[in-house]
Amino acid sequence: MSSIKIRTKRQQGTTQIRTLIAHPMETGLNTDNQNQKTIAAHFIQTLTVRHNDKIILTTDMGSGISRNPYFSFEMKGGEPGDKVTIQWSDNQGNRDSQDALIS
Amino acid sequence: MMQTRRQFIKKTLTIGGAFWASSWLVVKPLWAQTETLWPTGLFAHSKYQAALKDITGGQALIASKDITLTIPRIAENGALIPFSLSSTLEKAERVFVLVKKNPVPLVARFTLSPQVNTQLSARLKMAKTSQVVSIVLANGQYYYTDKTVKVTLGGCGG
Amino acid sequence: MTKLLFWLLVLGLLPIAPSTATPLNDQRTLQQHFLTQFPTLSRQDFANGVYALDPDAKQSWLAIEQFPPYEIAIDRGKKNFFTPFKNGQRYQDCFVDYQQGIGQHYPYWDLKTKTVVTLSQAINRCRQLNLEAPLKPTAGDLIALTAYLAFLSRDQSIAITIPPVPAAQAAYQQGKNYYHQRRGQLNFSCASCHIQNAGKRLRTETLSPLLGQTSNWPTYRLKWGRVGTLHQRIIGCHKQIRATPPALQSEVLRNLEYYMSYLSNGLPLNGPSVRK
Image (cartoon, rainbow over all chains, first blue to last red; front, side, top):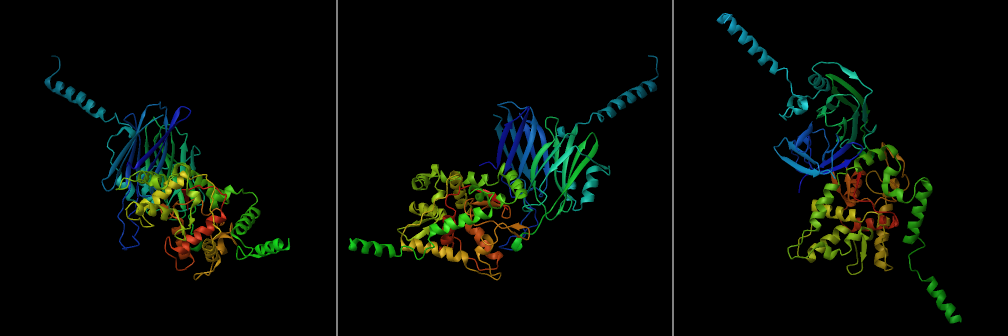
């Protein structure tokens, strides 16, 4: 299962792109209650939004973004059938990507 | 040939040099720069002032009524605070969101192409009551607005 | 004629319930109490808990509900629900009416085993019937399954039944007694905060009323950063008043859930939800 959920909504001449991502966004400052060990920092660093394979927005973030991050963006234009791609990479070398078609 | 060899070489070097120098004038807009390296330096700052200086290069921040930051006055829980940011400033290239008193003040940096409006929503964490600052880089200037969000201890110790 | 009158008199005096405080009476009294205390709220509003009482908190909540983090748990639960057991049987063979919503009937009194059964237990029963190991109450997969079933049960009116058998009535009564009994170093009962001081502030917290407290589970608590259960929340509350908490899915908590849910009969289910 992809970690990325995408919802698009065409409005007056724009397309709202919203995404919810399953990711712990650990700061590296928390301790595990069970074993008293520090939980390693684990957070998305970069998220890109593509429209028909062209980057339209990049988000660089730190662990100050909440767990299971959510973002909403507004793109100019957008036609049914257009492809939106959300991609992320984190500080531990993981990555994921998901496509959605504008309806 | 009218000119001397010396003149010819000088001319060639001058023209060649001009071409070489001008290639530096064609700067790619921020959003089109394909190196997507995470700005480690910006996120390494633990003090707001240092992060701000690194972002603006010392340039002054200009208060702007053309940026709207919507965020709760009192956080339900510091772990997840929803916010929205919109701006009518033209040629906005970057948006920065900072929480002054967070262990890492810089929360996010958005790099915008002309194909997106400056209209964003996200969810951030706050360690304690602090100002939240949103900065928009537009036309080479850094504009900002800020809001204070209270983060409190709940009843019965949270 | 006198014989008929005699028997009518005898039957009329037979104690069907221990006192005039029947469960139905409790339910009506409680609902009326809160509707009177908060005249601007309809019964349905109480299902939103504190968000029905605090407009600022409600704004923040609605912003999160635009694309709520519990959707991740619903997706996981849906995937689990439609994964057949090793023997080829499926969850829908146990929960035949799952599409119409089943959450409004939980917890229920099981006449055979003579105990209150919660949805989590029913899921585990289904697993055990199909030779699968039961899941721990804290298991993400189990919570996700309840999240999916709660999602399908949205808008159903809570419809808990207490059969007229002494053991069921006793379970309800135990739940009620537990709710009203003071405990812990802070010496509070559940009722101290959630009935007597509902709507008031405890530091910056607004105390939610008992009415509607069971409608939104399992819930993504911002404090937990994940979806959790009513029992987990109740245990948290015990710790907050410095009382020894009972075990998850123990008889004590199941009877307490039985009591709490019954009192909210008629309110709409709205889980999974987000709370602070």
